[in-house]
Length: 410
Ligand SMILES: NC(=O)c1ccc[n+]([C@@H]2O[C@H](COP(=O)([O-])OP(=O)(O)OC[C@H]3O[C@@H](n4cnc5c(N)ncnc54)[C@H](O)[C@@H]3O)[C@@H](O)[C@H]2O)c1
Image (cartoon, rainbow, N blue to C red):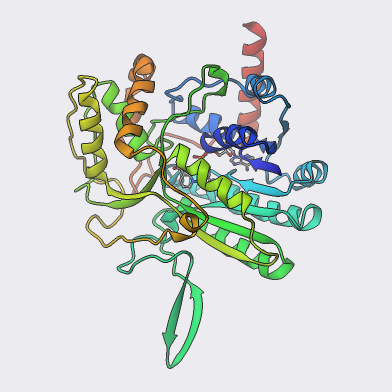
C-alpha cells in the first residue's frame, strides 16, 4: 500500500515509517519539523540524540532500498498539502501531525490558541485535501484516550447505546477532555466523523493511550526521539529519564490517576493493523488503542523495580498536582476492536522498561544537563506568568535559517 504519514518526523511518525517500510509498504510523508522547535522552546532536547531530517531521509533510502517521498510542509498550507496528496496518491493517510502536549496547551492563551488552531485547522485542511485528491484513501487519525476523560462508566469504543424517554439510539460516547489540547482532539473527532458522513470518506479514529518506549537502530540516524521535558515527555518516558539520572520520580498528587498505556512497538503493530484493514466508504469507526490500564503510582513502582537490575536506587517523591483532574476514579475502557483484528501485546511492560533504562543510560549526561526541565511549572488553573512564549512563524523561520547556517559552519 502507499501510505502517507503526516507528522513523519515525530516520535511515532519516524518509527511508523520504518515499521511500514519493513512490511513492504511504500511510505511518503510530510512534516513542518515543529516538534523540534517546541522542545527547543521548552529549553530541552530529546534524550536520545536524533538526526536532522536530511540525514534521516538519507538513511531511510539506504536501509529500505527506496527513498521516502518527503514534503516539508505545514498541514495548514492547504495548497501545498493538496499538491502533495495529488502527487503521492496514497491508499492510506496516517494523521499524526498535531501538537500532542496537554501541558503545552495550558501555558497561556497563546499556547492554547496555537494548539487548537494547529490541530483543528490542520485536520480540516487534510479532510478537504483528501476529499479533493484521494477520496478513496483511508484516513487513520490519531486521537487520544484523553478525549473521554474519566467518566464514572466503562468507556466503549466511540459509541454506546442509549435509551432516553423510551427511545433507543447508538450515539457518540460523551467526551470530557481535561486540557485545551485534548479538546482539540475532540473537535477533530467530530470533524472527521462529519466528513465521512458528508463526503463518504472512510476513517479510523484511534483513541490512543499514553505511549512509552525507545526505538533504536544500529544506524543512529534511524533512532526516534524521546522527550522528558514537562510538556513533551509522557509519564513513563519521563520516569525512566528521572531514574537514570538519580532524580526522584514525581507522581502528581496521590498518583492514583489511572490511564491506558501501550508500548511504542505495540502502537506500531496496532496502527499497521488499522491501515491493513480499512473500513468501508462513509464509515467512521473508533478504536481504543491501549494495552494496560495502570495508575501513575504503578508506573513509578514498575520503574523502581526495573532499576534494581541496573543497581540504580530510585526514590519516589509525590508532588502537588499541577493539573485539574480526578485522582481517585473509575477507569475501564474497552479495547476489543484491535484485538479482533489480531493485536497481541509483544513484550511485557517490565521488560520494555528494562530495555528503555538500558537505552537511556548511555545518555544520562545529556538528560542530567537538562534536569531542570523535568519539574512541572505549568499549572492548569493559573500559569499566566509562565516564561515560555510560543514561537511565531517569523521566529521559526529565523530559527530554521540559523540552524541551516549552523549546519553549513560544521
Ligand atoms: N505519544 C503519545 O503518547 C500519544 C498518545 C496519544 C495520542 N498521540 C497522538 O499521536 C500523534 C503523534 O504523536 P507524537 O507523540 O508522535 O507527537 P510528535 O510531536 O512527536 O509528532 C507530531 C509531528 O507532527 C508534526 N506537526 C505538528 N503539527 C504540524 C503541522 N501543522 N503541519 C505539519 N507537521 C506538523 C510535528 O513537527 C511532529 O514531527 C499526535 O496526534 C498525538 O496527539 C500520541
